Image (cartoon, rainbow, N blue to C red; front, side, top):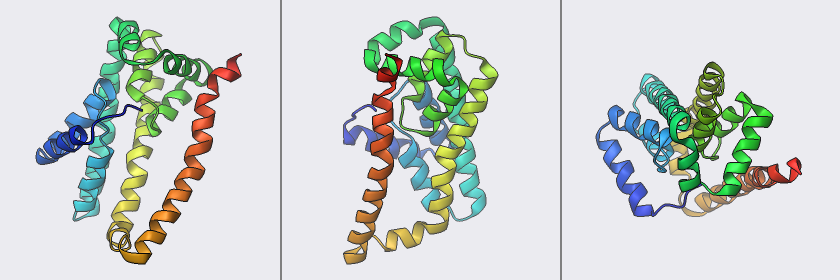
Length: 202
């Protein structure tokens, strides 16, 4: 994942939030094609501020479809200039792992990138450069991005207020500790699998 200045991310999120749904569409689509600022904080904020389930569903739908449309732009970029972009902005080890992901898992690899912190746009560039089946690419992106935005959306819409109220005092410290432990349990094996992709090929 890219390491970005916190101020840059906050400014971009604030700018997009001020534009409402249009800002959400711009941020999610461009992140899937070119720029490195993740749209997730904006999605979470808009869900927490939503006053109905219809608004939550609208936010998730716009984020998902815009992200897939952006990935299609990334696919097109990959068809015509993917090699140069990858060499310029993505490390060789990451490129090698993404190639393994596409070669070994195909559309499932696109799904993995769409639902995880793996660089989705870089995988879109590789898929375009390799002329991956466009229908599978789109289907995997819709399912993956739908889960990425939809699951947190459902949880935040149901438990958002209670989660915010529980993040104060001793209860907040306990909650933060539990969430951190669960996160480590998930992230550490995933990170080891990602780093081990190249070893498995040897």
